[in-house]
Length: 160
Image (cartoon, rainbow, N blue to C red; front, side, top):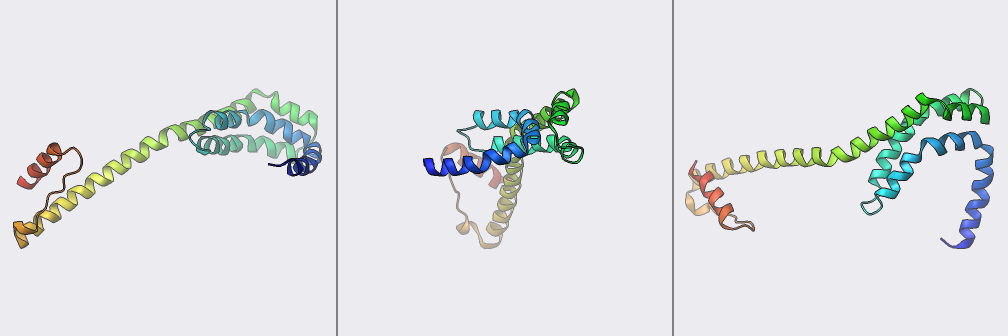
């Protein structure tokens, strides 16, 4: 980003932040786990930060609504960030975001393995039916890398 754009963005952002300083105070405390997630997962892409950030913002939203509709002042914001239950909500929601981020790949992998296993079984059944109908000339055995072990598995399944 060049210096003129940075200056323009700063010129716009600073007055807005000063107008909504109670919101900035609450979000500054509440969204710390999101910043940590973005820093920790830089090489893997933004997905960890986005997942944690969405859940973190969801945990902060009830307190933001209380702030916005119950008096948008600095003392109210300080009251929110000194509330232990608010901290539990902020960081508990962020922890749930981390749980989603860490468990989703293994769940998707398990689902894909189960789906592909069923598809292989269906295709082998269909192949056996075609061999019975058209004869052994239509049969071909695909050997992926790994060679003899895959061929042995194919021959065993054809014998069934």
